[in-house]
Length: 157
Image 1 (cartoon, rainbow, N blue to C red):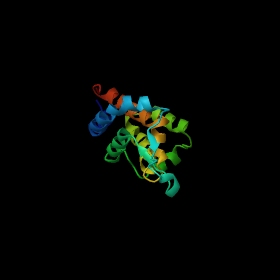
Image 2 (image 1 turned 90 degrees about the vertical axis):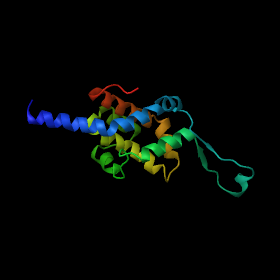
Image 3 (image 1 turned 90 degrees about the horizontal axis):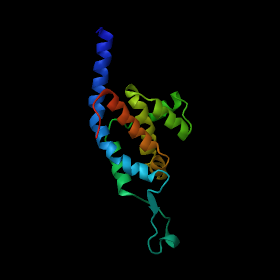
Image 4 (image 1 turned 180 degrees about the vertical axis):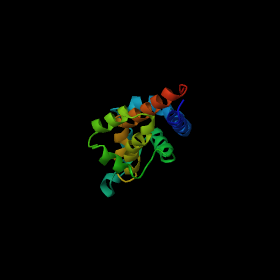
């Protein structure tokens, strides 16, 4: 085996070792994400008399909040995600899903960039977290991460 192949295998092993524990935790959300695709993951708080005196605000599903919190603590989230969007000419949900589906293990940062958009913008614009779920972005991203890890390693259960 030549040096280049050994280096590439070592690099892939390093990526698997880095991301597998994260992906193992994320895949537990796949059934929930699939069930909420095109569904609802938030309601508007309408406490007694709030409509007359204040603005309403969203109340998120606790599973969504747990997923966002988990993602925030991973190296998948990158504040510079806009560079991936610019470099890949991403404008729509379809563009995001195409990028996710063509990403390999070495492109994990691209998948993280797409999730970063929804997680980070959701901190300021409440509808982004919901959009990440209902558009299927989180589902597709986590599914692809799982496929990429399993291609180079043992299956994730």
